[in-house]
Image 1 (tube, rainbow over the protein chains, first blue to last red):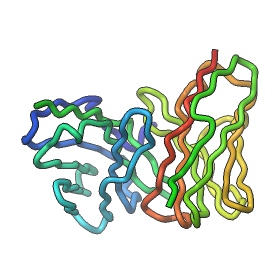
Image 2: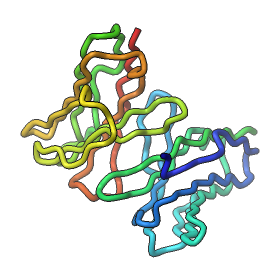
Image 3: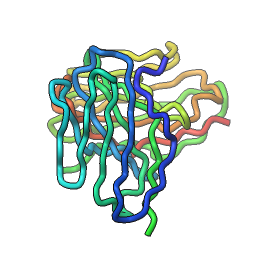
Image 4: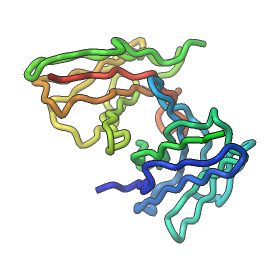
Length: 110
Length: 113
């Protein structure tokens, strides 16, 4: 069973607009959530994280929101840039391991 | 500081063979985790090693095994390869277990024919 779900396999956004990537989870015991970005032929790189005791964390153009009651988190990228085009994975920490979603491919077009 | 390195980067094997993949963590990192990435499945956790001991294991058959050496380098082995083992195998390191941030290598792409 997939404990961390990214239901949108792809997203296309115009440069300068907001990109919103979503992630749902089922396990209320997750204590930490992370977003990773992956370019082709490279490993995932850490982007931003949030503790389960918070509901928002911001880092430059990237903001992650956590809604514990809905078991939902989202990543907002504002403004989107062509260099943001990549696959984005959300991950949740559970008993010393990370559980990843299946990824969302973001394409930012001019 | 050099990042996580994985060798080889690409590998082609046939069914029934076995394969060994290698991972060198970032200098000073002692925790190494392995993941399998396949289309539509995301990253599936294989196992984690710390101080030469396996701390966690994912839901993979016993054909998948690993080990860690005293210098923190890690290897994973897959025996009796199946077509479904074709995937990108990623290694990630962190200073210690329980750290929120793991640093990934570029992966080894394995193709089983």
